[in-house]
Image (cartoon, rainbow, N blue to C red; front, side, top):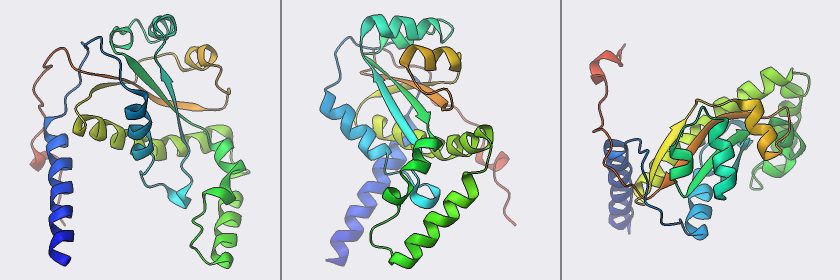
Length: 211
């Protein structure tokens, strides 16, 4: 049994490593739509990302309508991968919603007294913060789920292009999102119609300092 578990863990690690090594940003896509079941599963798995207090502040809007994608592209400085891809995912962080749902997000297997302390601590930490402070923290947490999403999409044969170039207030107005939320990224997703640039990164020795 232990050998089977180790084999499965090795396979999972191998798939994650391959996705990280081969992933590249793609801006040209095939016109084939993505099955809704695939999109739901990708976002479900991205939502497995860890977050402090298990708060899960990330939310997703999947834009597939051609007219809406064109409007979204217009408020993202004309980036064409938005209209070329069969779907673009707008990821946003909503800490106000997280505060309202906090008892629900605490793990049910925790002893009740620890759950109560966790909820109280979370509320004491964030209730009196400014919107900027609270939502800035939520964006940091949401970026973990963003990384999950990009690697999961790659592992399942989908190409992506994360975008930080957009006008946040206009994106929120276009999609009817609350004024207080923050948008870490837009992500176009679909079947690749180009190879894109080969992955290139700085040497690991420039990024690590062992002490």
